[in-house]
Length: 174
Image (cartoon, rainbow, N blue to C red; front, side, top):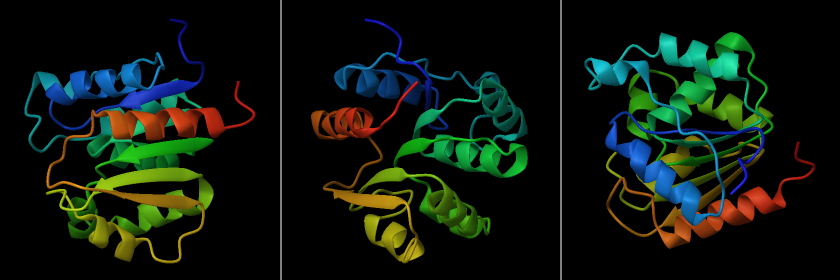
């Protein structure tokens, strides 16, 4: 399979999410690098994100597929490094963390600037679909899709189909 041009995959906070995101991308028929975070070698429970934000900005991807903290890193890179992402696909956005840290406005700003599809499980422990929808009311450029379930896991056929459709619907691509 040929690498998918311009696409980078940002996993969640836990190292196991790299495999989850690699599976998701493979199920969608795409081939893109999955970032390995520097903070995984230390305390990944509450990491400093500055290194990851800078690393993403240096990569300068046109398209981002991100889970959880990966979506936070993406929006922070857009804000602090003027990263120009053409489109984003987010799963399991950490709504509770964004609210707690006063960063929900960054997500709204991202959604105004960048066409974004967000899939969130109805009862995702990092923030429910209802919490996410309430936080993004009136945001342009975002499409929200509610998925059933109470987990923070997103490597399944339904999510892969949504990712495949999202990618095929982007135009023009590099």
